[in-house]
Image 1 (spheres, rainbow, N blue to C red):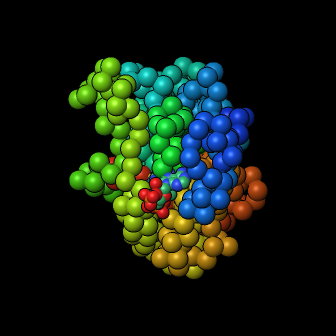
Image 2: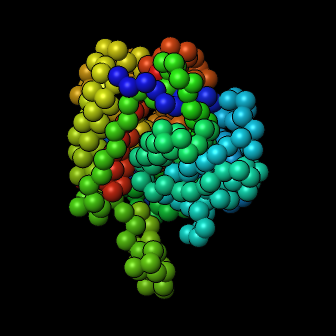
Length: 331
Ligand code: COA
């Protein structure tokens, strides 16, 4: 096991107040039912941002809590690594808006695009910058306003997603420390990009009346294929992170998987040989918040005492790209 370079010094989340239950889809004319959604996904409700809430504002809420808990002032942040699939605007990055909002004047700020795996990618990048000595303190945020990119006429996708943000302060360890990130693993397969994507609205097919008419700027997904790849890839990622940390499944106190679907979570836990009692689940209350899902779950796990000093956690994610990744963290 390598000496951990970086440790998580504080966590936080930024969650919109508005709750949308499965029953609320009826009012939108969506042909679905609470029973169908719960049986297929485990989702009971999700949070939906108001018009005045943005990816940046949710990120700022999460970041302020994480910084307060870490005892870190905005001026001490060297880098803001923001993962989002829903930037507030396409140029510049949402990370620089967050920097301005927080007054983190010394930081280098940039977005990472790896969909639901984005926060794991962001953590890996931030840890790498610490390893090379470029930075000492980073804010790693996952923030998503998924309600702005889902097709509210497509019942197979709009029921799945929700809004929110999660953040951690990552700090460089002193030389003899034993807590922190013990291993990371990231991977992608771009040949599968069109199983979960937004066909238009970017540089190749910019917005036009046709794009608006055919709704091709919204998320499209091949549900069954995505499900199959998610289970396979997250299982592989669990194994890789455990190997990297020279640990076995038994050594893990808590598994915090990306919260996409309870059936994906259960299958992943089974393949990873982690009993469900050790798995953190909040997909029932938030749905899939993309790259915000793991840092939100981690923050709740810290707050409830399930993650405390000495806890060894396995974090694992999967998302569009496809991308997947994992890490083992000792607290
Ligand atoms: N309510 C009611 N029926 C619905 C529905 C909804 N919200 N969405 C789809 N259906 C219908 C379909 O139209 C289909 O009907 P048909 O058989 O008459 O054509 C039927 O349910 C089965 O559809 P299918 O897509 O095969 O269902 P499924 O069991 O695969 O469940 C998902 C659909 C989306 C819940 C499931 O595929 C899934 O969770 N995939 C992974 C999604 C995910 O997590 N993506 C993010 C990864 S980061």
